[in-house]
Amino acid sequence: MAGYTLEFERPILELQVKIQELKELAQEERADFGTEIARLERKVVRLQEEVFANLTPWQRAQIARHPGRPYSLDYIRLMLTDFLELHGDRGYADDRAIVGGLARLDGLPLVVIGQQKGRDTKEKLLRNFAMAHPEGYRKALRLMKLAEKFRRPVLTLVDTPGAFPGVGAEERGQAEAIARNLREMAGLSVPIVVAIVGEGGSGGALGLAVGDTILMLEYAIYSVISPEGCASILWRDPGKAPEAAAAMRITALDLQRLKLIDGIVPEPVGGAHRNHQEVAATLKGAVTEAFRGLREMPVDALLEQRYQKFRAMGVFENG
Image 1: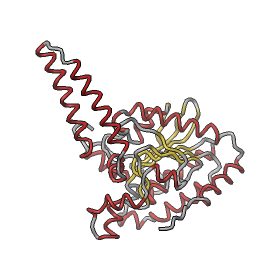
Image 2: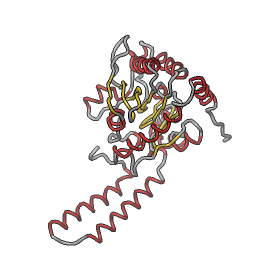
Image 3: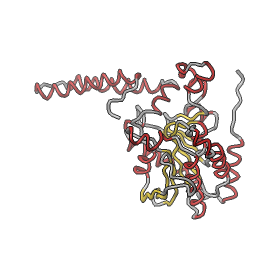
């Protein structure tokens, strides 16, 4: 998103602004600043590599929430073809925080389901900031059952701060809807690939994240609670979110080491918001490769592998 800069990106932005000013001055004055511009461009590359190679977990969380990152509908547009969106849970309403439908991945028919954030105020309210109600999870389950009926694999795109915690959502069975998704996804007889593309927050993320292969973008996060929420509970101070983020092991590198995810999908230097097309192409390749192996497995073997995968999760460390 134009004009949105994270604090640790400011030195990079300042250099980029200086380069642009030199280019404009060179045109106005008909002067040759090529040597200086090249030197500054090399400096920008070195600075970017240095900054993004040493990000703290909290800084990664800020990138995961960057409003310029691609959202689910962006990935669907850039990765898939013939997308036909399907609506409603056939019981209460159509939750616009969840999008999904039929599509093709390089000719492979599949069902795609994602959590959709909004760009502007109107869309954020329409999508409820990607925080689904029970009917959203029931819509997702309806689409998964449709995939199972027609033997289509399922791709889910996870990007939510968490399930919506409002009174109405609780009255309509938020916890039951998420729990049912966990149970049904565990036994779904078609391959499931999960891609955590931004925030993977709490049960709101997990309700779409039981899969055979779980991929995670390099700067995405995945956790049982937000860093601010954790800090508020432990220290009664949301300002300690950076400390909480470091303790919670929310980054892709930590989660791969703990065997909670299966693969990390690289992002462009600076994050996915820098180049939507590049990150979508990289994710598409990873998803295609994941489906290639899963589609060849007999159903019994697929379900047993999925069961053993989640049974084996959990690493204990002595403090």
